[in-house]
Image (tube, rainbow, N blue to C red; front, side, top):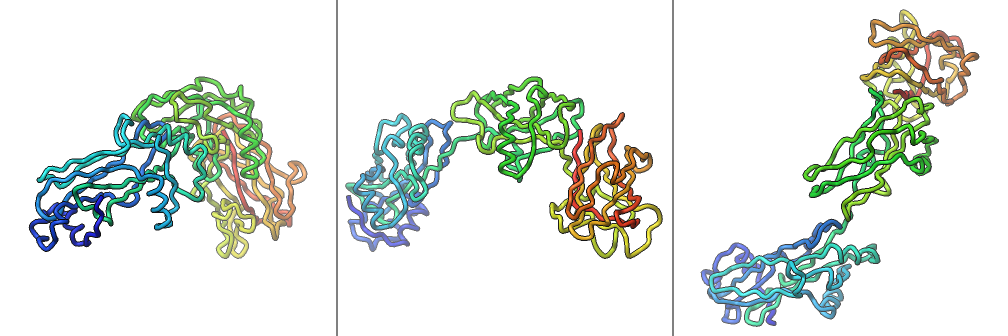
Length: 449
Protein backbone atom coordinates (compact mmCIF):
# COMPACT_ATOMS: atom_id res chain seq x y z
CA UNK A 1 0.00 0.00 0.00
CA UNK A 2 1.39 3.41 -0.96
CA UNK A 3 0.63 6.22 1.49
CA UNK A 4 2.33 9.51 0.59
CA UNK A 5 1.51 12.94 2.03
CA UNK A 6 -0.51 14.98 -0.46
CA UNK A 7 -0.65 18.77 -0.10
CA UNK A 8 -3.91 20.32 1.04
CA UNK A 9 -4.28 22.16 -2.26
CA UNK A 10 -4.50 18.84 -4.04
CA UNK A 11 -7.08 17.64 -1.51
CA UNK A 12 -9.21 20.70 -2.23
CA UNK A 13 -8.90 20.07 -5.95
CA UNK A 14 -10.04 16.49 -5.55
CA UNK A 15 -13.09 17.56 -3.61
CA UNK A 16 -14.01 20.04 -6.32
CA UNK A 17 -14.02 17.30 -8.95
CA UNK A 18 -11.52 19.16 -11.22
CA UNK A 19 -9.08 17.01 -13.21
CA UNK A 20 -5.66 17.01 -11.58
CA UNK A 21 -4.06 16.90 -15.03
CA UNK A 22 -5.23 20.45 -15.65
CA UNK A 23 -3.26 22.07 -12.82
CA UNK A 24 -0.90 19.59 -11.23
CA UNK A 25 1.53 18.60 -13.97
CA UNK A 26 4.30 19.43 -11.50
CA UNK A 27 3.64 16.16 -9.63
CA UNK A 28 5.77 13.18 -10.63
CA UNK A 29 4.39 9.96 -12.05
CA UNK A 30 3.99 8.33 -8.65
CA UNK A 31 1.02 10.68 -8.11
CA UNK A 32 -0.70 9.50 -11.26
CA UNK A 33 -3.54 8.10 -9.11
CA UNK A 34 -4.54 9.44 -5.70
CA UNK A 35 -7.41 8.00 -3.66
CA UNK A 36 -8.96 9.30 -0.43
CA UNK A 37 -12.03 9.02 1.81
CA UNK A 38 -14.04 12.22 1.53
CA UNK A 39 -15.79 11.34 4.81
CA UNK A 40 -12.57 10.86 6.78
CA UNK A 41 -12.64 11.39 10.54
CA UNK A 42 -15.58 10.73 12.85
CA UNK A 43 -18.98 9.76 11.48
CA UNK A 44 -21.73 9.50 14.14
CA UNK A 45 -24.53 7.10 13.20
CA UNK A 46 -27.87 6.72 14.99
CA UNK A 47 -28.72 3.06 15.46
CA UNK A 48 -31.98 1.97 17.10
CA UNK A 49 -32.80 -1.41 18.56
CA UNK A 50 -35.66 -1.68 16.05
CA UNK A 51 -33.27 -1.43 13.09
CA UNK A 52 -31.77 -4.33 11.14
CA UNK A 53 -28.62 -3.12 9.37
CA UNK A 54 -27.97 0.61 9.30
CA UNK A 55 -25.85 1.95 6.42
CA UNK A 56 -23.12 4.53 6.85
CA UNK A 57 -22.31 6.00 3.45
CA UNK A 58 -18.77 6.88 2.34
CA UNK A 59 -17.49 8.63 -0.76
CA UNK A 60 -14.13 7.40 -2.02
CA UNK A 61 -12.54 9.88 -4.42
CA UNK A 62 -9.88 9.45 -7.11
CA UNK A 63 -7.69 12.16 -8.52
CA UNK A 64 -4.08 12.72 -9.42
CA UNK A 65 -2.00 13.38 -12.52
CA UNK A 66 -3.95 12.30 -15.58
CA UNK A 67 -7.11 10.28 -15.95
CA UNK A 68 -5.80 6.86 -15.07
CA UNK A 69 -7.73 3.84 -13.84
CA UNK A 70 -7.16 2.79 -10.25
CA UNK A 71 -8.24 0.26 -7.66
CA UNK A 72 -8.76 0.64 -3.92
CA UNK A 73 -10.06 -1.36 -0.99
CA UNK A 74 -12.13 -0.05 1.90
CA UNK A 75 -11.83 -2.35 4.91
CA UNK A 76 -11.84 -2.47 8.69
CA UNK A 77 -8.58 -1.97 10.53
CA UNK A 78 -6.96 -4.98 12.06
CA UNK A 79 -6.58 -5.11 15.83
CA UNK A 80 -2.88 -4.29 15.44
CA UNK A 81 -3.56 -1.30 13.18
CA UNK A 82 -6.23 -0.03 15.56
CA UNK A 83 -3.90 -0.34 18.55
CA UNK A 84 -1.20 1.55 16.65
CA UNK A 85 -3.68 4.30 15.77
CA UNK A 86 -4.80 4.63 19.39
CA UNK A 87 -1.23 4.82 20.64
CA UNK A 88 -0.46 7.63 18.19
CA UNK A 89 -3.72 9.59 18.47
CA UNK A 90 -4.78 9.00 22.10
CA UNK A 91 -8.41 8.79 20.95
CA UNK A 92 -10.74 7.16 23.55
CA UNK A 93 -12.07 4.55 21.13
CA UNK A 94 -12.96 0.89 21.56
CA UNK A 95 -13.08 -1.34 18.51
CA UNK A 96 -16.44 -3.02 17.88
CA UNK A 97 -16.45 -6.77 17.39
CA UNK A 98 -16.58 -7.90 13.75
CA UNK A 99 -20.15 -9.21 14.02
CA UNK A 100 -21.36 -5.63 14.61
CA UNK A 101 -20.59 -4.46 11.08
CA UNK A 102 -20.16 -5.59 7.48
CA UNK A 103 -19.34 -4.14 4.07
CA UNK A 104 -22.45 -5.50 2.38
CA UNK A 105 -26.14 -5.54 3.18
CA UNK A 106 -26.12 -9.34 3.51
CA UNK A 107 -23.30 -9.17 6.07
CA UNK A 108 -20.95 -11.50 4.19
CA UNK A 109 -17.93 -9.31 3.45
CA UNK A 110 -15.27 -7.65 5.56
CA UNK A 111 -14.13 -5.21 2.87
CA UNK A 112 -15.18 -3.58 -0.39
CA UNK A 113 -13.02 -3.55 -3.52
CA UNK A 114 -13.38 -0.50 -5.74
CA UNK A 115 -12.38 -0.22 -9.39
CA UNK A 116 -12.18 3.25 -10.92
CA UNK A 117 -12.16 3.61 -14.67
CA UNK A 118 -10.08 6.37 -16.20
CA UNK A 119 -12.95 8.85 -16.17
CA UNK A 120 -14.40 8.05 -12.70
CA UNK A 121 -13.67 10.53 -9.92
CA UNK A 122 -15.60 8.96 -7.03
CA UNK A 123 -17.61 5.98 -5.84
CA UNK A 124 -20.21 5.59 -3.10
CA UNK A 125 -19.89 2.69 -0.69
CA UNK A 126 -21.83 1.65 2.41
CA UNK A 127 -20.60 0.11 5.62
CA UNK A 128 -23.43 -1.49 7.61
CA UNK A 129 -23.87 -1.61 11.38
CA UNK A 130 -25.79 -4.62 12.68
CA UNK A 131 -28.27 -3.24 15.22
CA UNK A 132 -28.96 -6.54 16.98
CA UNK A 133 -25.27 -7.41 17.41
CA UNK A 134 -24.50 -3.85 18.50
CA UNK A 135 -27.26 -4.08 21.12
CA UNK A 136 -25.72 -7.24 22.57
CA UNK A 137 -22.29 -5.61 22.57
CA UNK A 138 -23.64 -2.56 24.42
CA UNK A 139 -25.22 -4.74 27.13
CA UNK A 140 -21.79 -5.45 28.60
CA UNK A 141 -19.84 -2.46 27.30
CA UNK A 142 -18.78 0.22 29.79
CA UNK A 143 -19.00 3.38 27.75
CA UNK A 144 -17.91 5.77 30.49
CA UNK A 145 -14.31 5.97 29.20
CA UNK A 146 -14.39 4.78 25.60
CA UNK A 147 -16.63 5.16 22.54
CA UNK A 148 -17.24 2.05 20.43
CA UNK A 149 -16.26 2.55 16.79
CA UNK A 150 -15.99 0.78 13.45
CA UNK A 151 -12.47 1.78 12.28
CA UNK A 152 -12.43 1.97 8.48
CA UNK A 153 -9.36 2.53 6.30
CA UNK A 154 -8.55 2.83 2.61
CA UNK A 155 -5.66 1.12 0.82
CA UNK A 156 -4.55 0.70 -2.78
CA UNK A 157 -1.95 -1.35 -4.62
CA UNK A 158 -1.77 0.87 -7.69
CA UNK A 159 -2.63 4.36 -6.44
CA UNK A 160 -1.29 6.74 -3.85
CA UNK A 161 -3.41 7.01 -0.69
CA UNK A 162 -3.85 10.47 0.82
CA UNK A 163 -2.52 10.02 4.36
CA UNK A 164 -4.72 12.84 5.67
CA UNK A 165 -7.92 11.21 4.47
CA UNK A 166 -7.59 7.44 4.52
CA UNK A 167 -9.11 6.65 7.94
CA UNK A 168 -12.68 7.03 9.14
CA UNK A 169 -14.43 6.00 12.34
CA UNK A 170 -18.12 5.17 12.53
CA UNK A 171 -19.42 6.08 15.99
CA UNK A 172 -22.74 4.26 16.46
CA UNK A 173 -25.10 6.00 18.87
CA UNK A 174 -27.25 3.11 20.07
CA UNK A 175 -30.62 3.63 21.70
CA UNK A 176 -33.78 1.71 22.42
CA UNK A 177 -36.85 3.74 21.40
CA UNK A 178 -39.26 4.11 24.27
CA UNK A 179 -42.97 4.69 24.17
CA UNK A 180 -43.78 7.26 26.79
CA UNK A 181 -46.47 9.43 28.26
CA UNK A 182 -45.58 12.97 27.29
CA UNK A 183 -45.77 14.50 30.77
CA UNK A 184 -42.83 12.27 31.66
CA UNK A 185 -40.71 15.10 30.34
CA UNK A 186 -42.29 17.67 32.63
CA UNK A 187 -40.50 19.02 35.67
CA UNK A 188 -42.38 16.76 38.07
CA UNK A 189 -43.71 13.99 35.79
CA UNK A 190 -47.29 14.99 36.52
CA UNK A 191 -50.23 16.42 34.66
CA UNK A 192 -53.63 17.80 35.54
CA UNK A 193 -56.69 15.64 35.06
CA UNK A 194 -58.65 18.80 34.34
CA UNK A 195 -62.35 19.14 35.16
CA UNK A 196 -63.04 15.50 34.13
CA UNK A 197 -65.87 16.56 31.87
CA UNK A 198 -68.02 13.51 31.19
CA UNK A 199 -65.94 11.64 33.78
CA UNK A 200 -63.17 10.93 31.29
CA UNK A 201 -59.57 12.04 31.15
CA UNK A 202 -56.96 11.98 28.43
CA UNK A 203 -53.22 11.58 28.17
CA UNK A 204 -50.80 11.68 25.22
CA UNK A 205 -48.46 8.85 24.26
CA UNK A 206 -45.44 9.55 22.04
CA UNK A 207 -42.69 7.70 20.19
CA UNK A 208 -39.52 9.80 19.72
CA UNK A 209 -38.57 8.24 16.35
CA UNK A 210 -40.32 7.70 13.03
CA UNK A 211 -43.06 5.13 13.58
CA UNK A 212 -42.91 2.36 10.99
CA UNK A 213 -45.26 0.00 12.81
CA UNK A 214 -48.78 -0.32 14.13
CA UNK A 215 -47.79 -0.21 17.79
CA UNK A 216 -50.26 -1.76 20.19
CA UNK A 217 -49.66 -0.86 23.82
CA UNK A 218 -51.44 -1.26 27.13
CA UNK A 219 -51.88 1.24 29.96
CA UNK A 220 -52.50 0.32 33.57
CA UNK A 221 -53.10 2.05 36.89
CA UNK A 222 -50.02 1.14 38.90
CA UNK A 223 -50.09 2.12 42.61
CA UNK A 224 -46.37 1.33 42.93
CA UNK A 225 -45.68 4.43 40.83
CA UNK A 226 -46.87 6.64 43.68
CA UNK A 227 -44.19 5.46 46.12
CA UNK A 228 -41.52 6.18 43.50
CA UNK A 229 -43.03 9.57 42.76
CA UNK A 230 -43.25 10.54 46.42
CA UNK A 231 -39.65 9.54 47.00
CA UNK A 232 -38.42 11.44 43.95
CA UNK A 233 -40.33 14.67 44.52
CA UNK A 234 -40.91 14.72 48.26
CA UNK A 235 -44.68 14.42 47.83
CA UNK A 236 -47.24 12.57 49.96
CA UNK A 237 -49.73 11.33 47.38
CA UNK A 238 -51.89 8.23 47.68
CA UNK A 239 -53.08 6.13 44.76
CA UNK A 240 -56.65 5.96 43.63
CA UNK A 241 -58.24 2.52 43.71
CA UNK A 242 -57.32 0.98 40.30
CA UNK A 243 -60.95 -0.03 39.86
CA UNK A 244 -61.82 3.68 39.56
CA UNK A 245 -60.33 3.75 36.05
CA UNK A 246 -62.34 1.75 33.54
CA UNK A 247 -62.83 1.37 29.81
CA UNK A 248 -60.44 0.34 27.08
CA UNK A 249 -56.81 0.38 28.24
CA UNK A 250 -55.29 -1.11 25.07
CA UNK A 251 -54.56 1.21 22.16
CA UNK A 252 -52.86 1.13 18.74
CA UNK A 253 -50.70 3.93 17.36
CA UNK A 254 -50.87 3.60 13.55
CA UNK A 255 -47.72 3.53 11.44
CA UNK A 256 -46.75 7.00 10.30
CA UNK A 257 -47.91 8.71 13.50
CA UNK A 258 -45.65 9.55 16.42
CA UNK A 259 -48.21 10.50 19.05
CA UNK A 260 -51.80 9.86 19.99
CA UNK A 261 -54.25 10.91 22.68
CA UNK A 262 -55.81 8.16 24.76
CA UNK A 263 -58.89 8.49 26.95
CA UNK A 264 -60.12 6.53 29.94
CA UNK A 265 -63.15 6.65 32.20
CA UNK A 266 -62.77 7.58 35.85
CA UNK A 267 -64.99 7.50 38.90
CA UNK A 268 -64.32 10.90 40.54
CA UNK A 269 -65.99 9.82 43.78
CA UNK A 270 -62.87 7.73 44.44
CA UNK A 271 -60.67 10.83 44.29
CA UNK A 272 -61.00 11.33 48.04
CA UNK A 273 -59.02 14.57 48.30
CA UNK A 274 -56.16 16.53 46.78
CA UNK A 275 -53.65 13.85 47.79
CA UNK A 276 -55.35 11.17 45.67
CA UNK A 277 -53.76 10.66 42.26
CA UNK A 278 -54.13 8.40 39.23
CA UNK A 279 -50.74 6.71 38.60
CA UNK A 280 -50.40 5.50 35.02
CA UNK A 281 -47.79 3.33 33.36
CA UNK A 282 -47.40 1.83 29.89
CA UNK A 283 -46.98 -1.85 30.67
CA UNK A 284 -46.53 -3.53 27.29
CA UNK A 285 -45.94 -3.01 23.56
CA UNK A 286 -46.12 -5.42 20.63
CA UNK A 287 -43.03 -4.25 18.70
CA UNK A 288 -39.72 -5.89 19.49
CA UNK A 289 -37.19 -3.22 20.46
CA UNK A 290 -39.76 -0.62 21.54
CA UNK A 291 -40.34 -0.72 25.27
CA UNK A 292 -42.18 1.42 27.80
CA UNK A 293 -39.84 3.90 29.47
CA UNK A 294 -39.27 2.26 32.85
CA UNK A 295 -37.65 5.35 34.39
CA UNK A 296 -39.77 8.18 33.02
CA UNK A 297 -42.48 6.40 31.10
CA UNK A 298 -45.13 7.07 33.67
CA UNK A 299 -47.06 10.09 34.87
CA UNK A 300 -49.15 10.82 37.94
CA UNK A 301 -52.52 12.31 37.09
CA UNK A 302 -53.54 14.81 39.75
CA UNK A 303 -56.60 16.97 40.16
CA UNK A 304 -54.40 19.99 40.89
CA UNK A 305 -55.51 22.93 38.78
CA UNK A 306 -52.60 24.60 36.92
CA UNK A 307 -53.08 28.17 38.13
CA UNK A 308 -51.49 31.09 36.28
CA UNK A 309 -51.19 34.69 37.42
CA UNK A 310 -53.65 35.93 34.75
CA UNK A 311 -56.37 33.92 36.54
CA UNK A 312 -55.88 35.95 39.74
CA UNK A 313 -57.32 39.36 40.55
CA UNK A 314 -58.01 41.59 43.55
CA UNK A 315 -59.74 44.86 44.33
CA UNK A 316 -57.11 45.90 46.84
CA UNK A 317 -53.53 45.35 45.68
CA UNK A 318 -51.00 46.98 47.98
CA UNK A 319 -48.91 49.30 45.74
CA UNK A 320 -45.70 49.00 47.77
CA UNK A 321 -45.33 45.21 48.11
CA UNK A 322 -46.83 41.76 47.61
CA UNK A 323 -47.76 40.94 43.99
CA UNK A 324 -50.29 38.33 42.89
CA UNK A 325 -47.50 36.40 41.15
CA UNK A 326 -45.99 35.67 44.58
CA UNK A 327 -48.89 33.34 45.28
CA UNK A 328 -47.65 30.90 42.61
CA UNK A 329 -43.85 30.98 42.91
CA UNK A 330 -43.43 28.09 45.37
CA UNK A 331 -41.58 30.40 47.77
CA UNK A 332 -42.93 30.93 51.30
CA UNK A 333 -40.80 34.04 51.73
CA UNK A 334 -42.79 35.94 49.10
CA UNK A 335 -46.44 36.92 49.52
CA UNK A 336 -49.52 38.73 48.23
CA UNK A 337 -50.61 41.68 50.39
CA UNK A 338 -53.85 43.60 50.14
CA UNK A 339 -53.79 47.37 50.51
CA UNK A 340 -52.60 48.79 53.83
CA UNK A 341 -50.93 52.03 52.68
CA UNK A 342 -54.00 53.24 50.74
CA UNK A 343 -57.69 52.97 51.52
CA UNK A 344 -60.01 50.76 49.47
CA UNK A 345 -63.82 50.81 49.44
CA UNK A 346 -65.40 47.52 50.39
CA UNK A 347 -63.96 44.31 51.78
CA UNK A 348 -60.61 43.20 50.39
CA UNK A 349 -60.74 40.07 48.25
CA UNK A 350 -58.66 37.66 46.18
CA UNK A 351 -60.45 36.14 43.18
CA UNK A 352 -59.67 33.21 40.87
CA UNK A 353 -61.28 32.99 37.41
CA UNK A 354 -60.70 29.52 35.95
CA UNK A 355 -61.03 28.64 32.24
CA UNK A 356 -62.95 25.47 33.15
CA UNK A 357 -65.83 24.77 35.52
CA UNK A 358 -65.57 22.36 38.44
CA UNK A 359 -68.13 20.52 40.53
CA UNK A 360 -65.67 19.72 43.30
CA UNK A 361 -62.75 21.84 44.51
CA UNK A 362 -60.28 22.01 47.36
CA UNK A 363 -58.17 25.06 48.26
CA UNK A 364 -54.89 25.39 50.09
CA UNK A 365 -53.03 28.53 51.09
CA UNK A 366 -50.01 29.26 53.26
CA UNK A 367 -49.46 31.94 55.89
CA UNK A 368 -46.72 34.50 55.54
CA UNK A 369 -43.51 33.49 57.32
CA UNK A 370 -43.38 36.90 59.04
CA UNK A 371 -46.41 38.98 60.05
CA UNK A 372 -48.62 35.90 59.83
CA UNK A 373 -51.21 37.59 62.04
CA UNK A 374 -52.43 39.39 58.92
CA UNK A 375 -53.66 36.06 57.53
CA UNK A 376 -57.49 35.85 57.34
CA UNK A 377 -59.09 34.41 60.46
CA UNK A 378 -62.65 35.08 59.27
CA UNK A 379 -63.52 35.24 55.58
CA UNK A 380 -66.38 34.73 53.14
CA UNK A 381 -66.13 32.37 50.19
CA UNK A 382 -68.08 33.18 47.00
CA UNK A 383 -68.60 31.07 43.87
CA UNK A 384 -70.17 31.63 40.46
CA UNK A 385 -69.83 31.21 36.73
CA UNK A 386 -68.91 34.87 36.09
CA UNK A 387 -67.97 38.02 37.98
CA UNK A 388 -71.59 39.20 37.87
CA UNK A 389 -73.32 36.21 39.50
CA UNK A 390 -71.15 35.43 42.53
CA UNK A 391 -73.05 34.15 45.57
CA UNK A 392 -71.91 33.52 49.11
CA UNK A 393 -71.23 29.80 49.43
CA UNK A 394 -69.61 29.50 52.86
CA UNK A 395 -68.37 31.62 55.77
CA UNK A 396 -65.10 30.53 57.39
CA UNK A 397 -64.06 31.12 61.00
CA UNK A 398 -60.76 30.07 62.51
CA UNK A 399 -62.31 28.31 65.52
CA UNK A 400 -65.04 26.50 63.57
CA UNK A 401 -63.01 25.47 60.50
CA UNK A 402 -59.71 24.78 62.28
CA UNK A 403 -57.69 27.50 60.52
CA UNK A 404 -54.03 27.61 61.50
CA UNK A 405 -52.61 31.11 62.10
CA UNK A 406 -48.99 30.09 62.74
CA UNK A 407 -46.10 31.50 60.76
CA UNK A 408 -45.60 29.67 57.44
CA UNK A 409 -48.42 27.21 58.18
CA UNK A 410 -50.43 25.63 55.35
CA UNK A 411 -54.23 25.66 55.53
CA UNK A 412 -55.90 22.92 53.49
CA UNK A 413 -59.63 23.65 53.44
CA UNK A 414 -62.13 20.82 53.38
CA UNK A 415 -63.33 19.74 49.88
CA UNK A 416 -66.35 21.60 48.54
CA UNK A 417 -69.06 20.18 46.26
CA UNK A 418 -71.35 22.28 44.04
CA UNK A 419 -74.73 21.44 42.57
CA UNK A 420 -73.70 23.03 39.27
CA UNK A 421 -70.09 23.43 38.06
CA UNK A 422 -68.43 26.72 39.05
CA UNK A 423 -65.48 28.61 37.55
CA UNK A 424 -65.11 31.81 39.65
CA UNK A 425 -64.04 31.72 43.30
CA UNK A 426 -63.49 34.63 45.69
CA UNK A 427 -61.92 34.78 49.15
CA UNK A 428 -63.20 37.93 50.85
CA UNK A 429 -61.45 38.89 54.08
CA UNK A 430 -63.73 39.74 57.01
CA UNK A 431 -61.05 40.10 59.64
CA UNK A 432 -57.43 39.02 59.91
CA UNK A 433 -56.06 37.35 63.03
CA UNK A 434 -54.99 40.77 64.31
CA UNK A 435 -58.31 42.35 63.41
CA UNK A 436 -57.23 44.22 60.26
CA UNK A 437 -59.34 44.62 57.14
CA UNK A 438 -56.28 44.01 54.95
CA UNK A 439 -54.78 40.53 54.67
CA UNK A 440 -51.76 38.60 53.42
CA UNK A 441 -51.42 35.14 51.81
CA UNK A 442 -48.69 33.11 50.19
CA UNK A 443 -48.68 29.95 48.03
CA UNK A 444 -52.21 29.42 46.75
CA UNK A 445 -53.16 26.02 45.27
CA UNK A 446 -56.43 24.50 44.04
CA UNK A 447 -57.58 21.00 43.14
CA UNK A 448 -60.77 20.19 41.31
CA UNK A 449 -62.80 17.98 38.99
